[in-house]
Image 1 (cartoon, rainbow, N blue to C red):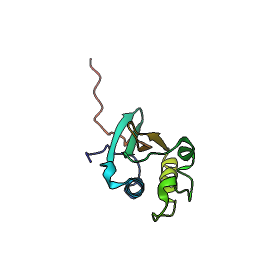
Image 2: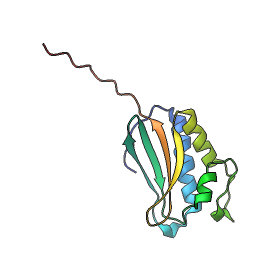
Image 3: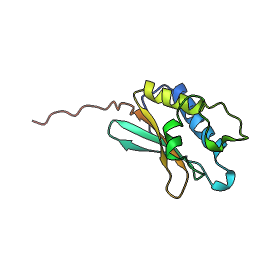
Length: 130
């Protein structure tokens, strides 16, 4: 994982958010499917953070329910879990003026995305020229 940009969200919430996203990928993706990727991109006043896997992915129907409380994916059989992790992710994102969603990973898998506000940059104002 490379350094990720700062956000204007309390550290404990960011920790909980990433912990839930990464644990979700670990639970639903077989180890032979490769590494879990964590990254971000900049989009206007938000940072989009993502956790990407190359597992079985999610159907369109599942993508509409995946952040619902107590929802367990179709590949959850035999795996422990409560179905609250991604619901917490969405709740944190919404509470912090962001969003949470899932996209299909090219060549298979799922990319879970969360937008959060950028941390403000406090710079020295430039002087007007005369």
